[in-house]
Image 1 (cartoon, rainbow, N blue to C red):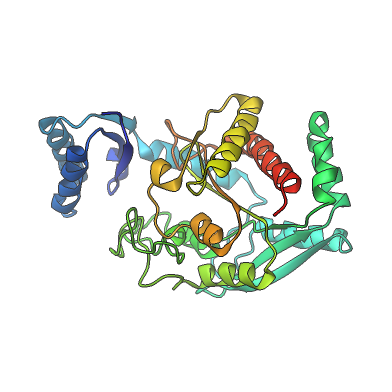
Image 2: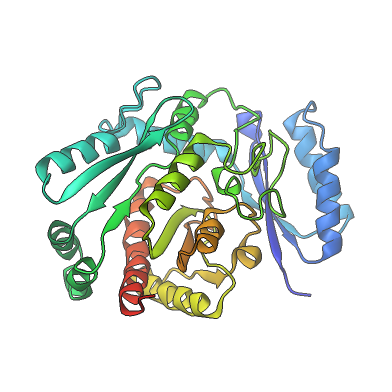
Amino acid sequence: MGKFRYLLLGLIAIPALDQVLRINAESEDHIQILKELERDVDSGVSVKSLLSAVKDFLKKNNVPFTVMINNVQELLVREREEMVHNVEMERKTKSFSFAIYNFMDTLVASHSNLISKVKIGSTYENCPMYVLKFSTVWLADRIATDFKENRAPVPSILSQMDIYLMIVANPDGYVSTHRSATSNPKCHGVDLNRNWDAEFGGPGASDDPCAEDHCGPSAQSENKVKNMAGFIMSHGNFKSFMTLHSYMHGTDAPDQPELHDVATQASKALNSWHGTVYKVGSIFHILQASGASVDWTYLLGIKYSFAFELRDTGEYGFLLPADQIVSTARETWFALRYILKYVCDHPY
């Protein structure tokens, strides 16, 4: 039987001993063994003892694994150093004055006739949530400047549709990450991409408040999800929905032949920039995630709904180095552009 699931187990409490294991579950028996492991892990023991116990358990049960990240702390230190040197990226817990929000304001002020900022609500911690609505000319010129060799399709796309961009979907999460940089909290709250009203609480979601895939007490219980869902439903004329996450190198779409073909071609377009290879499939096959936004939008009637799981799959995982961000964004744009062009050419 081929490998059908990847699990990542992070053991984090004493920084010098942090490791991440990549566990390859090759059978249903392996899945059950890993569920047993999850139940039996004692968070009160030392990380060194726990790490050894987990490795011994996996070896005893013939579950293959590799050490994906040998020293998590080393990567965290590197990431924090990059943040410190990026003096423009202010992160103030109370005011949430991210440079990206300031950039949005500057952008709108400079091009008020072409770009508008729409507030769609506030978060639990009262951070504002915005989307930017882009008209045609300015965005076409900007993208053409960045990607001169691929200029042709952009103006035609933007002459046929408006684009709404949500840059920050989870501002509370950014604040929490900065606030808890040294506290290592064990419970991280609700995974927003398990909280949508689409097969809520099914496979790939947990009702454990301390699980990374915690779905919340009920479908769309979280302010952020309510705000996004409310905006989408009130608009009423969206033809495509694309959401970007990390990490896995995957393009997900509802299990429908046309969408699979579109996702495949979009992934090929992405690959043309840096050679990055993406898997293509439904959420169930790429990553079980009940309560996902892309399934909710598809059920709502937004036919061309896609989710991208961006870099990385190897050494870095969620801790993608800052020097890979631009290349990731550029290659992803090739995929997004293909989908936008396809949507324009195939109205419904």
